[in-house]
Structure formats: structure tokens, C-alpha cells
Image 1: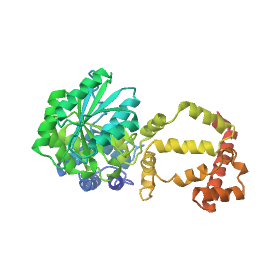
Image 2 (image 1 turned 120 degrees about the vertical axis):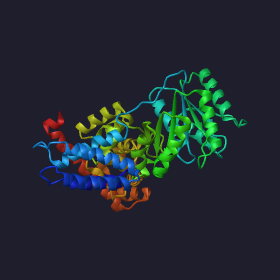
Image 3 (image 1 turned 135 degrees about the vertical axis):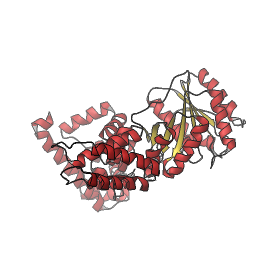
Image 4 (image 1 turned 90 degrees about the vertical axis):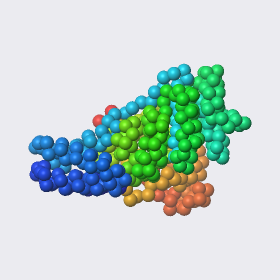
Length: 433
């Protein structure tokens, strides 16, 4: 995400690298490039101008310490200003009420229904008991879609096949939640292909009737300034509490994320980066600013790992590594754990410096498929004892996995090299400790 913007901002700050001090001339040149990068990212001219003026004022008022280069100082100034532009600090959703009521609004195609399922899954993982109410009575198969999502994540969905009154469906669903002891209700409403008065009246009436504790506006980040304009119109009518940016993994520019807080003065609360139920992140302005500036986001990466890794399994694996007993069964489990964490390229981009290195590399989520096929074509004994896999076994594994003997040999060599590395690390006392 934000690849183009990240590269252009880095190039802009490069102007100050190698300079002995900050001056009006080199700051003006850097600010000019930053503004150009923001405009290319579909940030409005006014926001880009205000942002860069702030940077210029702060940069010219700074004395460069001997231990900090002008380039490093400018990076910090840009980072701090970008954090403010993105909202300053994380804002939680309001879950007060019994049940707490969350109303989801947005245009058709923005990813509303998918987000509803992801949010329910997220809240369920926090120990809450959500109920989804399907109030999109217009779009074909909308109710069926949310039911499928609900079944996938193990969350109840309330719908009425015969009713075409979304307000009454919402009220009936809330009554059901009280009976079934669901402590959170998420209302998925209908969208339109464009903003129209009928849609606005309907969503406004639902909000007035159910009095939600939280109203979230879902917007497709790939639509850039159109997303910002739509958010403003919705906010004028609904006065929503927060924004959800969807399809952020497909957005390399970032205009919507950088502009929306300034325009509607409402925080971004969640970002969605894929189709899987787990592909939802709480929005942290500071972490996002770091990622945009190519500084990575190790904290979020660790949190994803903690969320998806089983502590008992991790301890079991640690013991096997220490005894140098790591095998293909363990390797396959690790692959499954990594895949659960989300988009591979996005995960690697959280590591400082890696995002730039892999910008032109096509890393598909299917990258592990060949490896998985090879391992799954092994017998249980072969997975447990890789050393018994001779040339005849390798031919059979290649045939069974639909791969070639070359690919099987390559995996075997990589696996053996990894085992040698683990063995050598175990011999090092500080590492072993």
C-alpha cells in the first residue's frame, strides 16, 4: 500500500541528504517535491499546501544537532506532521450499551458487507458476542452474502425474508439480540451506486430509530478524492463517528487516507486490506505514517504474529528446534500460521527497509502452494524423518504434487540448509540461552 507515495516522499527527502545544514533554499526544494508527491497521491491542493507549509515552518525553525543530519531531521518533521494529518492518535469505537449498536453506512461496492463480517469476527476474537442484522433488502444476494460470512466466522445473522422495511428489521433484530444475549449488534445497511436522497433518508431514519452507539462510514480507498467528497456528504447528513478505509492493499497512492480526517474531522478507525475475515486492522496514525515513510511497522507485525500463533505450539516448536528435530510437519504448520497473518507482501512491507526492496517483486499469496503440495505428497514418515527421502521417493513426491524433481530437490536443499543453520545456532551459548 502507498508504494508510489512512499517512493516519492523518500526521493523528496533525499534532497537534504548530504547537506551540511538546513537552509531556506534546500528546504524549499524538499517541500516542493513533497507537495508534488502528495498531489500525485490525489491529496487535495489545499491539504497538500497546508501540510507542506507546516513542514517548512518547522524545518526552518530547527537547529540541526551534530548527531542528526538534515535528512534525518526532515524525516522526523514529515513523520510528525503526517501523524497529525492522519488523526494524531488511535480512536476506539464506542461499545457502550446493552447491546452496543454499530451502524454501517456507505456506497454500494465500498466493501460494507465484507467489512461487517470482518468487524464481527474482530469483536468475537475479543470475547464479545456480536449479532449481524441484514438490512440490505435491495441488492440481489446481499442477505445471502452476509449469511455465508456469518457462517464462516461463527456469528449469528438476523434477517427477514418477507420484509422490505429496513427500519423495522433493525428494531426486530435488536430485540432478538436481547433475547439471545448478544452484547453487540452490527447493522449492515443498503448502499447505492451513487448518493441519492432516498438512500440518505433511509439510513438517516435507521440511525434515528436505533440510536447507535457507533456509526461507521465505509469507503473504498481506491476512489481517492471521490471517497473524500462522498464522506463529506454522508457526514453532513449522518454525523458519523468514524471512517473505515477498505481495499487499502490495492491503493498505492493514499489520497483518501491522507485527506479524509482533515475534510470531515472524523477519525479513521479501521483499515481493510484483503478479503479474508482476519484482514482487518485497527488504524494507528503513527504506525501508518511510519509505513508511508518506509520506516516499517514492527509493532503491528508482532501483534499479528501474537494473534495468530498458538503459545503451546510455539513452545513445542522451540523445544524441537533446540534438539535439532525440526521436520517437514513442523515446517508445514509454520506456513499455515504465516498465511493466517494476511497478505505476504503487506507483511514483508512492515519490516523496516524491506518495502522498498520488494516494490517491484510480485509476491503472491499463492507463493507457498508449490511447497505445500510437495510436503503434502510426502508420507507421514517422510515428513517426520526427511533423511529417508532418497531419489526414488523424490520422484514419487514430484509426481504426486504435480511439480518437478528439480523443485523437490530445491526444497530439500533449502530445508537442509535451514536445519544446518539451526544446528549451528544451537551451538552458540548466547543464542542457545
